[in-house]
Length: 83
Image (tube, rainbow, N blue to C red; front, side, top):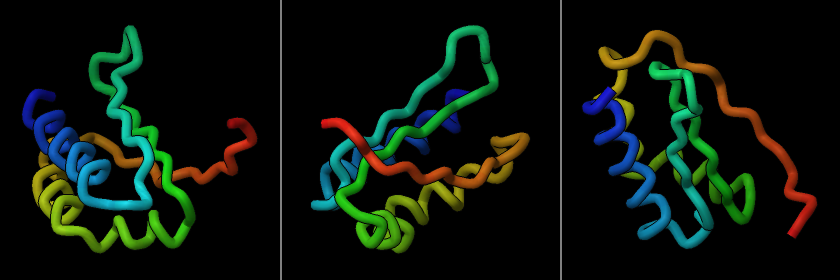
């Protein structure tokens, strides 16, 4: 888990710092779920998220995580209603 979180935090920090369209990138561990991590990301647009998929920091994360995970769920997209 420590190695996974280190890689995830690198991606999250660079996403917020280096991508103008990334407004928020939270790395969350739900209580009572020691082996679960949730990413909550807010982008200005779907195009900004698609641009995120091509970044070097996401590439580093993708290279690091395969031996560290049990299952990867696909992203789910939502439309912000407030604010």
